[in-house]
Each structure stands twice: as structure tokens, then as C-alpha cells.
Image 1 (tube, protein in one colour):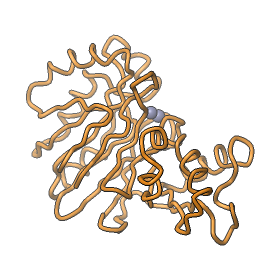
Image 2: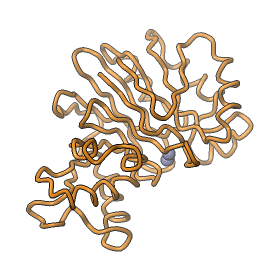
Image 3: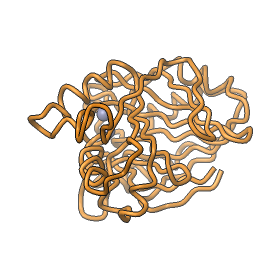
Length: 255
Ligand SMILES: [Zn+2]
Ligand SMILES: [Zn+2]
């Protein structure tokens, strides 16, 4: 599985993009950064976007990708996959003909630019070459992570989350688990705001990783607020018993 990090930060600044992971050429997890980094040719190859939650830093480039697809006259719709609650939020609050046109009915309801597809947490679905399963997380709005499997190798993308239980239990039981992408948005000094906003700090990450017994996948950290990246890096260095990597925008990861 080839993963290209289009963006991996929890805020936007010059040279710091918000979250999007490209798997192979046609599947994305989240849509924080697409159209500012992929060529039009690369954008037209995207068939599916798995959305972890409706926060703007994870959905905003669906809007600009849909607009580009519309004027490229592509026949195949772009499929936006998530839970019913998350899809409803995106449809109601983003593609609502006020903030942005409802591209699920443009150019026509029969042949639209985007289609919404609902996935139920806990159920595995086959999408192209991938097996995908959503898992519930614990953030301030409805949020899921995704287990993505191909050729006996599994990767888990945890969306924004504070401390949680089920996801780690599921991770422990995931066959062929090679890697987990997990957020660490804020440094320990901001733990109070992390608790209020449903995010992890290095200390709460360390507690979470203790729940991941029996397995030792690569741990890829993302969703840092850029101004705290270096502080977070120093604090994370205290976690000794895990293979932790802090990822960068543009990085390519082969699993
Ligand atoms: Zn976020
Ligand atoms: Zn969020």
C-alpha cells in the first residue's frame, strides 16, 4: 500500500496543509488538502474520499475538487464515503446551495459530480482493491477512523480523537496491522484545551498507546498545530517503547 501525505496538520499556515492521505491513486482519507497540491490529472483519478468527520479542516477540498470535476466533464461521480450522520452534516452545511452548490445534483441528479455513500461502523466494505471498515472515535462531533486492508496488510487511520477505548481494542484484533495514523494536536501545556476540543497531547497519547497491547505497529503522528510541532516532538520523545514517526506534508509511506 502506498500512502502519500497531502497534508497532515491541524491548522493551516504557509507550507502546512490540513489533513488528507492519498492511498494509491484513487482513494483519499479526508479532504483537507487536495486541489492545491495535486495536478488536475491526479485530481481526476480520485474515485473515493473517506471522511472521518465534518470539521472544515477535513472536508473543505471536496468543494474545490467537485468544482474541478464538473468542468472536466468526468462521467464517473466522485464518491464521498462516511457514516450517515457525517454525510448528512456535509450535505446540509457545505453542499447546501448556500455555502457551495449541491454537486450531488449538478449537472443533473441522474449523473451528478459527487455521490454520497454511507458506511456503517463495524462493517467491512470492499472498495476497489481495498477492504475498509469504519470505527467510532471520541471527538467533539461524530467522528470515525478507518481500517484499510489490502493484500493482508492493514493500516488504521484514526481521525481527530480524544481518549477512546473501542478503537484500540479493535486495533489489537486487526490481522496484519502494520501502521496506525493517530493525532497529537497539542502540547501537554495545553491539555485543558485539548480535553475541551477532543484532541490528544503527548501525555494522553502515551496513555492511549498503553491500551494497544500485544501488537507493535508503526505509529505515525499527525494533526499537530504547526506552531507547537517542535514542542510536541520533544514531548513525544519521552515515549520509548513504540516506533513513533512524526509525519510531514508531501511524505510518501510504503506499507
Ligand atoms: Zn481536524
Ligand atoms: Zn476535528
